[in-house]
Image 1: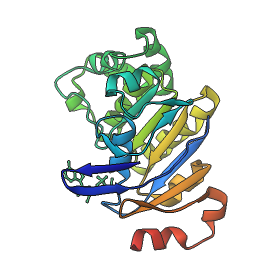
Image 2: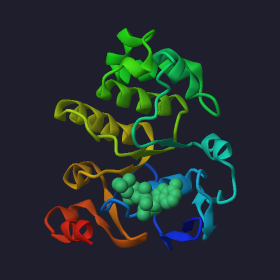
Image 3: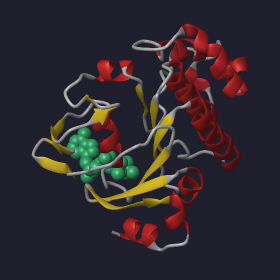
Length: 223
Ligand code: ATP
């Protein structure tokens, strides 16, 4: 797929695949086009050329809510919770296009820390709690493909560990994951495969096992 911001050609022919039930990492330096890739798949940014398919269906021209209804859910960079709404209300909004209110029990089971915060305004939560809420809100929509943009950003190591263990558990729930992550070492611990982007193109695509002992990742970041 290709994408532009105005006249600027940001994604310059990216091909990638997320197999059913896999965690696929998207790596690369700042500005490489990782967030734009997620936004293009979720229909927030229009692909200017190319094709995006999900389960064999061409979804390239669908609007974002139709894409969510198919089970592709985007958990954006920086959490983006609604600060003036409570935890309960933020979770409820996760079911706006897809999912069921009853999912809340499952979310609380995954993130028990949210249970005691149910009536608290999301803006008053800690960064870690906000990230749990953002992922929890995505889970309310019963994703089949969950796209996570920088879930570890700015969080304490113990919270990051918790969140990544949750991500590892998605495999058993048949949730595929496309994960943008600055911490490549961490991402490669959990992913089956990684793509590195550089200047809006795929620099390499390899299995995580192949990458763990190679210097390719460093080279992707250094450009
Ligand atoms: P980061 O890790 O810094 O978020 P990224 O790999 O996710 O980087 P993108 O956010 O996808 O990169 O940005 C890719 C390019 O597109 C960058 O050069 C960025 O400046 C540009 N860009 C992103 N959003 C916009 C926008 N709304 N308007 C114009 N240019 C944009």
